[in-house]
Image 1: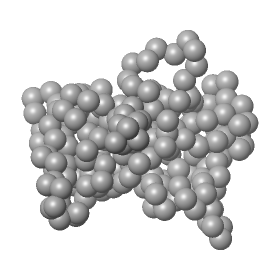
Image 2: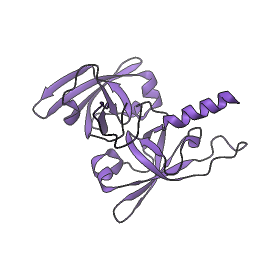
Image 3: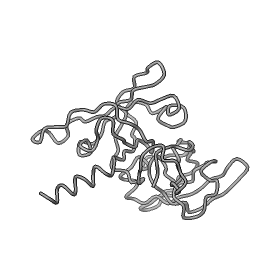
Image 4: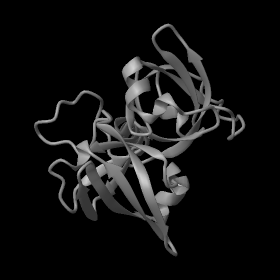
Length: 212
């Protein structure tokens, strides 16, 4: 489990492609403190397992295996050497829950639509797959590239008989810390972002559907 409070921005140093998987080697500092093989680290919101660590004087490089399912269902499919990535270690019983409970299981990939600078913040509109729109509510929580954010506005839900590909979006207001300390500060319109909706909403829908 994760909370969506990014600990640092790392850098993909190497990507090794295989037949149906890839190995990523990521440079980091803080998230390698006390790390052990088998630990979980979220990379842009994707829960990945540490398979190797090469420490050096400036932190180190850790490696992880990324399966075909993850490559096809998240933006990590387009990860390249030199790319910055948001990193967060899995929570412990002593961790402050500053964000919201996240699994690191990406539900879909959206993309940045617009950015509107404010005095001390930016309002960012993000397109979301229409089948995920029903799980997003104003003032609710959503993870964008592993960052826990509060939804400030949402598009109307498509009509039941409407077009299945109707545009759906939500907006978030990014404070200076988020702009400075995560990759969301430099995500340009058109760029993909990983999305994880609140898992509680999915459980509630499943339970109510069973009663019907």
